[in-house]
Amino acid sequence: MSWIISIVNQKGGVGKTTTAINLASSLSTFGKKVLIVDFDAQGNSSRGYGIDISLLNKTIYEALIGKYDINAIIKKTLVKNVDVAPANLRLSNFESETVGTVQDPFKILKNVLSKLTKNYDFILIDCPPSLGLLSINALSASNSALIPVQCEYFAMEGLAQVLSIIKRVQSSYNRDLEIEGFLLTMYETRSTLGKEIVSQVRGLFRENTFNVEIPRNISISESSGKGIPVNLYKPTSAGARAYMQLAKEILENESRRKEEWNCSK
Ligand SMILES: Nc1ncnc2c1ncn2[C@@H]1O[C@H](COP(=O)(O)OP(=O)(O)OP(=O)(O)O)[C@@H](O)[C@H]1O
Ligand SMILES: [Mg+2]
Image 1: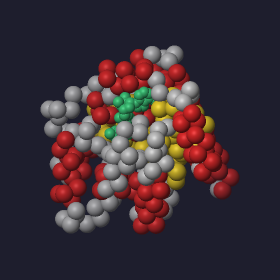
Image 2: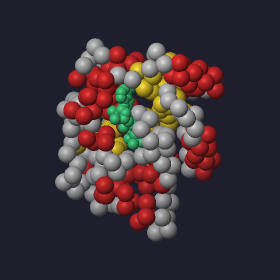
Image 3: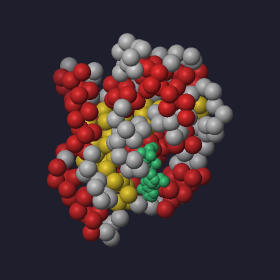
Image 4: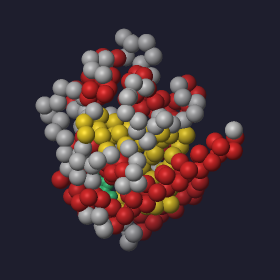
């Protein structure tokens, strides 16, 4: 069984896509098989793996509308254990075409993913910067939510909204949805503001905040532009090491869940 994580925050530019790309690659170095579901019409996580999305006619959109089987749209990447279900601009039609015409519009992705034939250890859903139909579909299909929080002005703004959507999904569509963790991103160690945000988030969500903070690091932004994950581009960079640390924490969460599950049997 795959563990499905939505990477979600309606605030734009907080590091959702960067986290999907680099967490996937880091998890793969521990032998894990990972699928990234690009759930944003910008197609940035597909591009981050060097996929040319402009001419693609088999994308997650076609899987959602039932034109192609999910297994037929998945692309292999340069990283052995990382596959991508790509997206492009056509995904932006999904909401207007679906609302009011489909029964159970919030469970479409869950049904699509249930048809996967390859066994992935982790599925990471890179959500768009909004809390509309796509993000609700992602959360309904997920075991947990990972929420990147940028260490910047107004970082806390909007977190209440993310949490309220998570509650809504828990009460209506997916009561087992967990919070995987809040992830502090683009942290500048020398900035006072950065330190303040870190202590605010840790103060509010201590239990649920990852220990690692992702630093603002030039190798991270350069690697995305080149279409490769940072751990292949600059393996010794602070950014690559931080995402490796995040993968370890996710794997520790996995071990803890397995232990709890064994104890409850
Ligand atoms: N740790 C980092 N260090 C340096 N640059 C970063 C870091 N994380 C992200 N960036 C850069 O910040 C920009 C926004 O990041 P990203 O695309 O991951 O955010 P996003 O939340 O997915 O945005 P959107 O809401 O538009 O989907 C990108 O140009 C990315 O390369
Ligand atoms: Mg993004």
